[in-house]
Image (cartoon, rainbow, N blue to C red):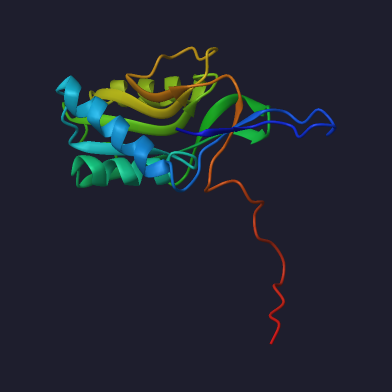
Length: 175
């Protein structure tokens, strides 16, 4: 499935990580999609939790043949293991006026503390949506158990879309 990075012999104690690769990512998404289909839930809308859930959310929408896709921008993690006091919704805000009674699949990369997922599920339920959740990874400490999860882990996760630092400054082009 995924690989786990282990420190090389003699290396300083590097933390172990769960590593999702671009090669394994489609397998994970298809496995999640099969779980959703097997449960009988047919989402009309996929809501990707930005930023980490953007890529998985889009892939899930394609895997399930769901045309309706939206995003909710939530800020919580500020660095590895560092969070704000509480998750918060960032603009732009998703138009939720068509969600009452809609079957919505919320997709995120990981249910770590579960606080982001709890916030999103609460917001959608207040709008009258029949919401379920799907994540690639679930951590044992999460306060919300996702409806669908690809893998359980207690390790920090490296995702292919966020493995490299942001690109900043001028880029030199060599001829």
